[in-house]
Structure formats: C-alpha cells, structure tokens
Length: 374
Length: 143
Image (cartoon, rainbow over all chains, first blue to last red; front, side, top):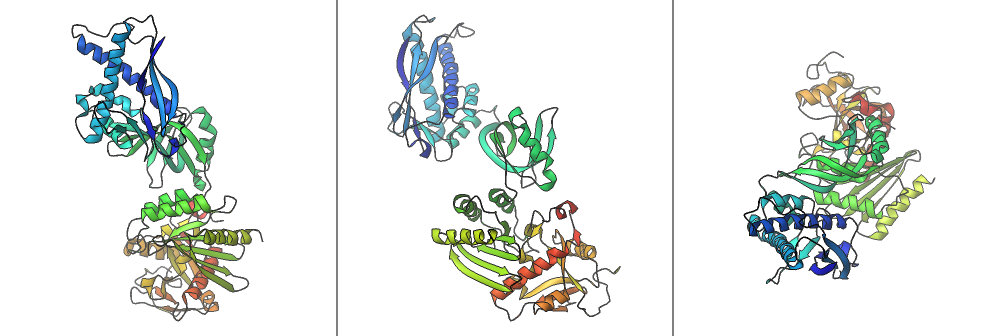
C-alpha cells in the first residue's frame, strides 16, 4: 500500500494545546473522508461527462489514515493510502482526491470570507458539514493551508454553519448541545421523551437503553421538579431554535437547587416582573453567578436558593435550623452583602464582601459550613 | 368575607388580623420563598403593601391582585399584626389604592434591621403555610 501526505489540518483551541486530539474528533475526520470520496467522485464525473455514474469500485482500496499528531497546537497528519491493486493507476486516483481536498478547503475559505461556497462544492455535498466540525467548540478552529495564500481556511462553528446553510435544501443544522430541564412526558413504547426547558418549551428526544433509568427517574420526579441535564446532538432551525435531540450522549440527574438551571429560569424574566417594576439580571451577571458556584463553592455544602432582586441583582439564601442567611450578589461590581439572623438568639451579623477575592469566597463557604456542622 | 376588595367596610386592624402578602412567582423556588418578599423595595418608601385579611380572604386578595390590578402572584402568605408588633413594626390600613389595602411600616430602621425583620416575618409566614396558591402542586414542595 502506498501512502502520500494528504492533509495536515491544524487544530486550534485550549483543548489542543497539549498537542493531543480528543477522541471525539475522530468522528469529524471520518466524515472528512466520506466527503472527500464523494467530491472525488464528482471530480471524476466532471472529466468524464459521457458517464452516467462513477466507476464501480471507485475509491475502493483508498483510505485516509491518521498517521501521526504533530505539535502546533495539535496537527493531525492524514495520509492518503492507496492499495496497489486498485481499479485505477495510482496517479489518477490521487489527482481526483487531491482536487476534492482542494475543493473542500476552497469552500471553507469561501464561507469564511463570504464568497460563494457552491463555486467550490456541489450543494448536495454541503450536508457533510453538518457532521464535520460538529465537535468544534466556541473559540476553536480547524485550519487548512490554502495553496497560494498565507492565511489558512478556518473551519469554526460559524463557518460550518454558513457551509451547511449555503445549501438551499438544508434548513436544519445539528450541534452538540446541552440543556437542563424537567421530563413531563416519556413514551416507553416509542422510546421517546419530552424535555421541558425553563422557558416552558418542550423538546422531543429519543430514549437510548443506557439512559432509560435516569430518564424514568426524572420523569417520576416531575411533580417534585426533578432536574436533569441532557447532553447530545441537537437539531436546530436556521434561526438557531432547538427543534429536537437526534441522539443523547449523557443524561445526569441534578441537584434540585442546581445553580445553572436556576440561572436559566432567571434569564426568562421580563422587565417589570415584580409588580410592574423589577429589573432583569444581566446575562453576563448570571454567567458570573454560575461560575462562582461551579468553580469556588465546595460541592459538599448545600446549594442556596437563588432569587432575583428588584434592582436586577441576585440574592442567595440558606435556611438551617433557626438561622436565616442571605448573600446579596451585585452582578456588575461582584460585591457581596452577607446577612445572617439567629432567630432564637435574636442576633444578627453582616459583612460586605468582594467576591472576586478568593479569601472572601472562602469566608462565605466557611460560614455556611459552620452552620451546617452545628 | 364575601365583599370584593374595593367594596369592603373598613374596620380597624386587630392583633389577630392576618395581613396577606402576594408573592411574586420569581420570588419562589421549589416552594421556598425569599425574605425579600417581606421587605419593602426602594420604591415602597419603607411601607410593605398587604391586604387586610379581616376584609378579604387570601383567595379574594389574589384574584384582586392578579385580575383587577393585572399583576402576577404565585400565591398568598400572611403574617399577623401581632407578629409585626412583636418586631416593633406597626401595621395600618391604607385604603387609598383600594379599601382592603394595608401596610406594614418599616420607617426609622437601618437596612440591617429591615433585613432582620423581613427574615423573621418570612419565617412566620412560611410556618403558617400558603393561604392560597395558584399552583397547589408547588405548595406540596415546601420543606
């Protein structure tokens, strides 16, 4: 079997900085191979307009293989491996595959620069981008060298979306996504369920056997608002509305007071939510609250109840025994105002905090821990 | 009871009078209620609006609040006048907006004192339980 260097995309992003590639990316490369084969067939047909279809056995014995991963930030080395006994002489097959590669890269470059994608690839092939690059996260890119250009073609979440939606036949796009919600409905005969989001929308999803137990637990706990975290492949409309889940990867039961889920509920507030007044908490402020509890609040401590304030901030509250605690979180300044009442003793204490300071965050955790350990 | 909130006869509050407080849906989480629900906001000028429970039932007050005033309420909690007085808070009728309107007065207190009294009022109200709930299933989650 002969092998020639075929393509060396550069993966850019925090996940690739240690010069490794997450296994989930292998799916994307498998799709790249499918697409290259399909485009190579189209290239062959362009040269042979007299034929109705590509020759039987075209691309048999031809494979793209991951030969190595080089540094910078992670650079998979993909070779074109062609078995000696293929239908065509080596140089012919190689030519079609290389043209296909250049067309795919040309289409990515075009999408990035807002020029016509279909000058490079036929519309019917664009659907492959629904799966290729799907593992990319925000701030990640797959870069391809463009012959004759200093700047690479960059496949990102954004360019991928442009490529898929450049096809007039494709109105939906799949994305890896995660949603928190409740399960009000499950159909064990059809193996489907409905996930209800904090906004009240219901999103259909399939039940895989390995997730059945968790889904039924969430379904049975619906009246108690049992929360579940779903990760999987979601299908979105052109307007980025989640229509349904195609497949699920993870189903996880959540703490009833899960801060991320509560933040999602607070994002649904409309101005005037409090008797006609009431400012809405800013989204970036809620992101900070989520981060605050996810990254710095000890997992073994009880989560607080979280409420919006009339001024558009957030207040966390804990009740234990005869102790009532509130922690006002000012979303713009990251200041905190701690207030605790011991009702039986009739005493109170308060403290102003800077929640960007680790010492103050630790102080809050220590105080909560001291109440729970009494 | 039986009178609509705008039509009641006005009589004085007694120590046993329950003061009905409408609870914003956003101020509940899994059946729990924030102490903010018993603290006047900055626009309230240290006067917390309630309904006089001697004049209207909790359900009537909820209907008046949501249907006639067009505001949102997840349900009704209440504290008694006696509970307010034990915290040094006066309560009085305030029939200007509508006849069954009353207020709990937080004037002359520091912010910290207001916070403390709001927390204790909330405790008392929660201990009494929901007097009316828009979605009864939520009330079952009270822990």
